[in-house]
Every structure is written in C-alpha cells, then in structure tokens.
Image 1 (tube, rainbow, N blue to C red):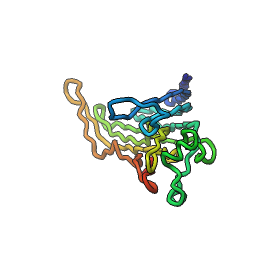
Image 2 (cartoon, rainbow, N blue to C red; image 1 turned 45 degrees about the vertical axis):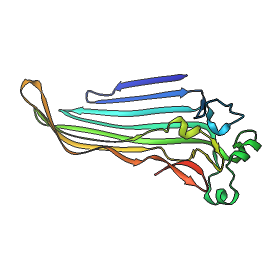
Image 3 (cartoon, rainbow, N blue to C red; image 1 turned 180 degrees about the vertical axis):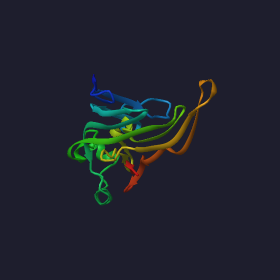
Image 4 (cartoon, rainbow, N blue to C red; image 1 turned 60 degrees about the horizontal axis):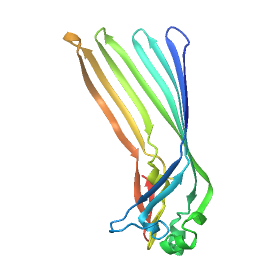
Length: 231
C-alpha cells in the first residue's frame, strides 16, 4: 500500500523548487526452510532449519530540491529524508549480558513458545536519515562547462537482516535493529566539452562515486550469537 505526491513551483524565471513524498506500508510473511536432508520438517519440529518472520514496516521518503538557472550556470541543491518504522523492538545484544547468561539458544527458544520475544527491550525501533545533495555546472565557453556533484545516499537493509531470528544449538542469528544503514558518499568534479558531430567529451578530474562510509556485516557476540553491525 503506497501513497506518492510531488509538487513543482516556478518561483521566478531563474528559480524553481520541487518537493515530494512517498509513503509505503507493506506486509511480509517469510516461510523458508534451509534443509539439506532428504525429508522436510515443520517449523515446530526443527525451528533452527527455518527462516521465518512476519514484518509490517512503514517507509517514508521525502525530498526538497531547488534549481537556480542563471546565464548558463545551473545549481541544484536538495535534501532527502528517509524514515523507516520497523514495527519491532530491539533485542538484548549487550556483550556482557550474553556472555554471562547465554540467553540465545535452541532450548530457550523452545521453552519460550518458539520465540525470543522475552529478550526484546525498549520501544519499537525506527530510523531517520537526512541526505544532502548538490550539483553545480558552469559554462566556460558555448561548447564547454565545468561541473561538480556531491551527495549522500543511504541504503535500507534487506528484510533478512532486520527480521530473521533463527535459533542454533549453541547460539542464534539475531538482528541488530539499532545498526546504522549503509551510507555512500559520492562526489565528482569534471570538465565537459562538445566536439564535432554533436558528441560530448568528458574529463573527470576527481570522482568517487562509490565511497562506502558504512556497511552492514555479520559479527559474533558471545558464543555463536550472530548479529548485523554497521562499520
């Protein structure tokens, strides 16, 4: 279920403003058995064989962008906001607590009606990120220009990393809902010139289109307790 709206306003001959918002509510039910045996087993019989979760996330994306076009110079300045409501509380992942209590294993999972819900703490987790964007180009001649682009881009985690809880004999796969989203910082500085036949030649003086500042990775906590971290 989604809702989208965009608006554009030409405030003057040289200045334009755009804004928009997207809202999405989704329901996911994952039921996938990871089993290399000849026969299949039910979740109740072998819960450690299953990737199983129900998810009801809400995603909101919005942006505002201004464009200045004056005597060939073009400047785009914008800001994007990304929000996600996970619909789940974070799990207790304190290193010392896990080491002293070993709370995540198959036996405890069975004793608590096939869940680790009793180990969830705090309020329902949500994330909000702001991403600045900047793009400027300036003519040098009628056939050439210099340009500069800069922006932050956040990538929300895949559902498995947010919702999968799988017990193991001596541990568990537990999502770290507090982990920061992966962020890419992109920037480039270049020169562009038109040549015969309408073709365009471009020279990038400085470019880093995929500078990954953060990424999600699996980490070990305690004995056999895996979670997703940002680093």
